Length: 351
Image (cartoon, rainbow, N blue to C red; front, side, top):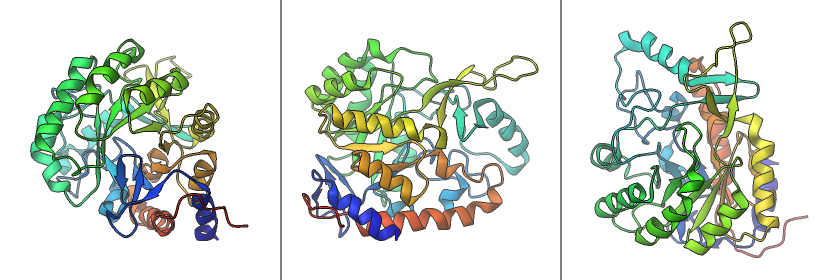
């Protein structure tokens, strides 16, 4: 049932073409993916783990899933310089340090009603360290490099660094994260400059990540005019939880980004409204996707690809002993989407 129903939905999409990157690959405008199922930014760190015992930055579920078989793996958001954010730039921990690591996580990641709140604040090793130490170890994957900055100049620098290190075509795209709530910055003040200055310089397709808390319809219109290749919808939703006994915020940043099952209806609404507004750019949908049925809903709403985020990769947190079982579920979803990943365009849905 899953394979047939998702196949019917994908046959109904009419602006995705075949691309001979592999027998199951698809082209979304300028972007070539291995299939229509990708992974969301941050949940898998830089796409590789230094330690299987304490895989900081990667959900342990991912250790039992073939990342190279996804349409693309999106990196943690990378900045020009290393950034502690509200967490740490470290990515290697001894088992003896695990209690301290979990304590740190408790201040930046909390499960809430049908979802997750995080306030990592773009903690990352910096673009140079990523390109030197991590990217070469993920060459078997199709990669989307997530970039973040606080000015057009920073985005230009990031694009130039990627251009210099990565030949055109070797990655799927770069994603501009100009909508994160965990860094306490109003990105609407720089978005147009970022699009005007950084997009034309990129040797790689550019994806713009949209937030439901900004004017996403206007932002999508700006993206079209600037030559952006695709949209990611949506980023996390700005949220707050307080301790009912003390009034203290759950997260060290007070506000955090809400993700997971709780925001799926919002993600579906944004994708649908983008299509209703006449936006024709390819859309990579993310927000509460965990099952084949979730994928179906997003495809019906107008998405061209779907992305697995916290609803999948944090599903067994903190009881990661269940990670191998969760991985079996992820594999089933991947198999269903891959089976219908490169269908002829303009086909009618099955009855």
